[in-house]
Amino acid sequence: MVIGLLTLDLHFPGARSLKDKRQVMRGLVSRIRKRFNVSVTEVEHQDLWQRARLAVVSVNTDHGHLEATLQSVAGEAASTRDAELVDQQTEVL
Image (tube, rainbow, N blue to C red; front, side, top):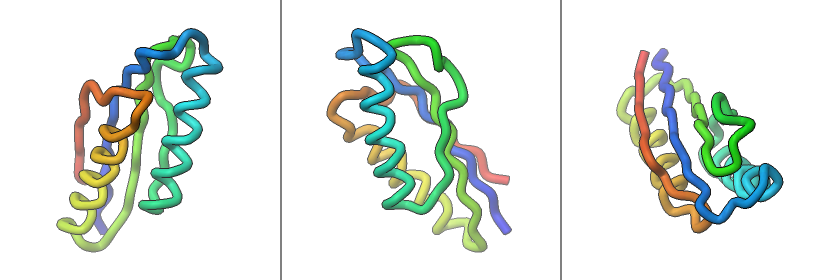
């Protein structure tokens, strides 16, 4: 069993309130969960308008498939129109 953790740091340049940020986040998190069947949650910066840190976790038996899934999730986050992917870190246990 292989466990993967992907941490995504996002910036929301167009957000003028927490409501704006949460609207973009809700759509992104929903797409990621539905498309990749992974667990996603915001783990830091909940009170900031233009920043967020997401943790994405997946469990698999194949190391290569797990890494490909997490890279695809990062690609999805990077392609989001209303958010910029600032940093990403992957850990595999």
